[in-house]
Image (tube, rainbow, N blue to C red; front, side, top):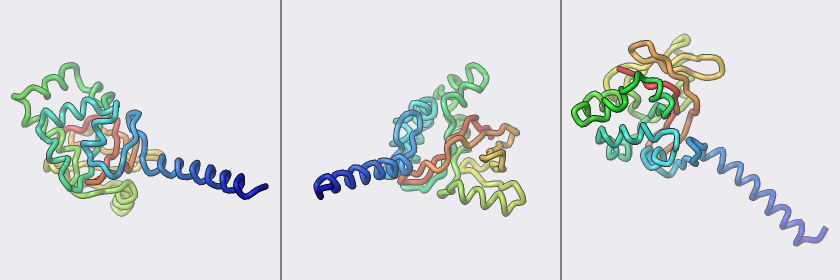
Length: 183
């Protein structure tokens, strides 16, 4: 095999490997690649699965906060998670007169600092199967192992599954969840 063909094959193999590396580094959430060089808001606006969350963050006036250096750990409910709430709940929360309640609900999904899935797992193990972490809102979330993944339980006993973990951002990490948590 001549040198030009061999180099071409090596370059192609490298490109395929690099593509796999990029996919592993940049998980796809809501049909969009999430880039660790972008902040939480910059990535979230591209996810088709998080349009309700983005609208809520905008209505609560939290865009600047979640765009700041942080770091933050965000448990990001999907549109389907918001759809599980009783009819009219989201619309009511988005009204200007309910901004305080909306802010409390959203900040209940945020932990100060960057907490990876590995760190959560270690905390659960050290806690004998459960770990409690404080939210920015001031409440507590309870984490536990469930099957092959982890659940997050709110103060009212609603449990969310972490469906996509470790979506790294420039200012923290997002863990996608399937249920809205309530303080």
